Amino acid sequence: MLDKIKDLPEKVAFAFGLTLILVSGSLLFLLSLLFQIGNWATWILGGIIWFIASLFIASAADKRHSRLDKKK
Image 1: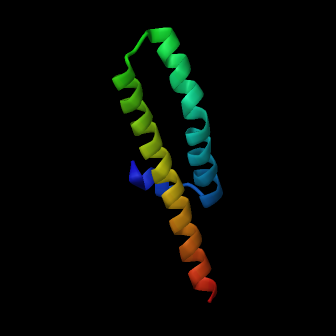
Image 2: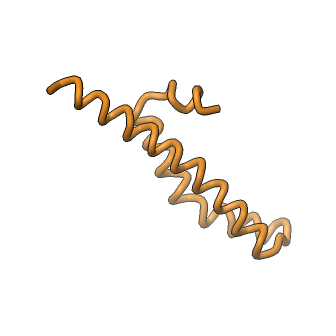
């Protein structure tokens, strides 16, 4: 899975990670309304979503820093 994340361009990876973070709150709210899941399940799902989003953002930042270091 990490190889697929690393293969994405930096702008796409950053946009996808930021979108996941911004949309995860409303997504979890809708899931809790539709499926009547508990608070702990919501927290766990939120943590998983934020972890994956962090991977996307960290990958984009790593690519950007490596690209900027080559210019020096």
